[in-house]
Image (cartoon, rainbow, N blue to C red):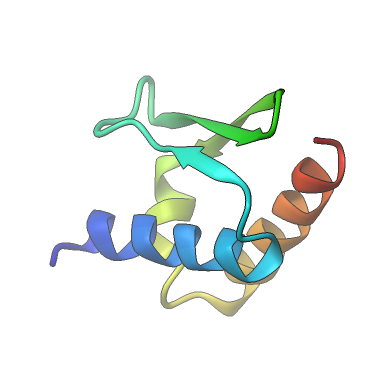
Length: 79
């Protein structure tokens, strides 16, 4: 598994821990070094942008993990 796939899997794991009912769509490639990620819960949908570098560093960088987890908590809370 390459770095990008590891990062995407870690991202999905975080969401599963926070709320397993949220559906996630992560594009296969970034646009302008950003991923536009769709979070859906029931009839509600929210789009978030995550830098490609954050996805790449997610499995290994504790500060990126913390920042991303906080952002996801807020995003999922608003669904």
